[in-house]
Length: 219
Image (cartoon, rainbow, N blue to C red; front, top):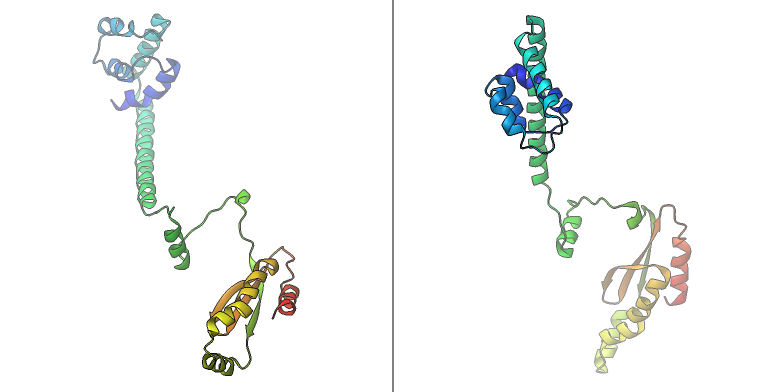
């Protein structure tokens, strides 16, 4: 069985990978006679030259029968090496499947945001998907109202709504300029708002100049 297994791959290639693997293997082992095998092989339409097909199987069968000790040792080593490679590949494939089971693909926006915030998300973007350039610097801009405490108290005495006043005269005008200057709101509380403009690598964004322009425009 060991020697037939060693010679079977080369024999199948010489047979054009036609017929049935199990039949060829059993014939090499002597489990089927030539008289029994030929009627079965005649049913395979892909075997065009049946005589040549049987001759090649007979040659390998005789080679196994008359092989000397050195040849048998060579076949044995070949089978052991093949078995060891199979065991190695099976273990590696098992490790691969185990590793793949640990991977969780996220497609829901909330899960992506949460995983990214926890620094657990591994993103592999294609070049054509437009990866976000690396941030190399930033500018922070703060805007608030002087004397806002006194202003708020006087408005309340007059029955006015300070929140509406600040929204119409401070926050709304700032919001209208954010996209123009590429700024982002970082912090908003009461009468103060903190903005940020990022400077990206390989992109001449001129963050400081844009921050100055934003300050002169409204703040």
